[in-house]
Image (cartoon, rainbow, N blue to C red; front, side, top):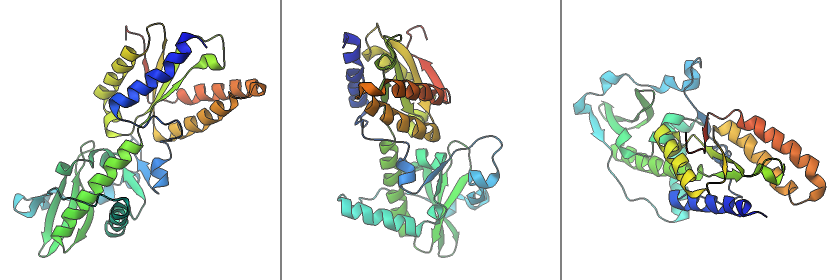
Length: 278
């Protein structure tokens, strides 16, 4: 192997360590939310109101200051068994999970307790509502006659979403030269775009600058920011390619997989160059 081929995995290791993300090649992110029986719904032009979950928005006239209480922090279970029990209760008690769909807004910004409120709808009846940071408005997450219980559920939901965000972050560094000797000194870097950090344009630019600083100057390439569906396809082909590269008899198959990967990368939501002039 050339020196450049040794540098790619080292760059990935440093990137993961500096950002605190899981760099294990066996960890896939495209199926994290489906694995929790959740479908991520993003706001896109032309989608029906039902698809954007707007039916759960509440009339802001109910948010009179005297009816609204902020959510306070609570200490939750720290052991896995206790956390699993709390998450089961969360799904059972909050109707927002009945449809097994979650908005990108809630997925990303639900990790902050400051975006939740408890509203007294009428005597002895309370709503847990969430402030949509991206599309505006307030979403009703559930109602009960137990105000304290809603505070606890907000804390559980916040931690659950924080853990899901972390599970959905990774980075792939692919060297086309492993398949095509005509493409030396190039890297394909693939990252998910649907978590809170990676959804921010400013943070994505920081990631580009960080990668450029830890990747040797003689290596160039592009960074591809993928949505959840495109990432699922990429991860499937990437794993097949990694297996195929261990068998020299599968060179043609590897070349075909790389072509498919290039097609999938063409669907990236955003493409950045590693060139310092960008």
